Image (cartoon, rainbow, N blue to C red; front, side):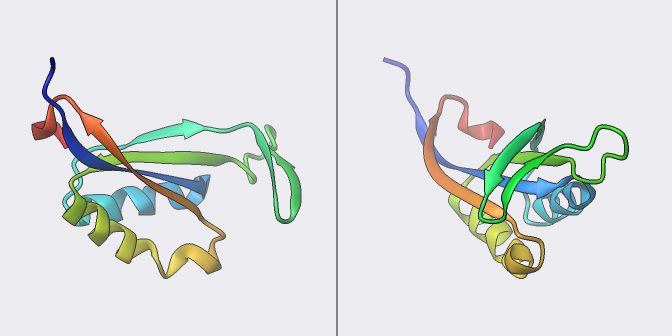
Length: 103
């Protein structure tokens, strides 16, 4: 059986202009990597939304990262002030990784 190690997976739904700031905050928290996944549309408390392909003004990403629990907690504390002001949706879950030294 392959040995696994628990790590924290964090997903943040973020408006495209804020994504670089999240990347900087993750780096400051000691998180070495992330992935941005472009989204097309969705529905939330304020109704439907979809990306405006002409201006990109409503583009959103899923900011995805995996980190050890201490770094994950530091990152979440750093982004906490942005939750209400930027309407972030944040998910945190524990995942098992195969190569823990990468996270």
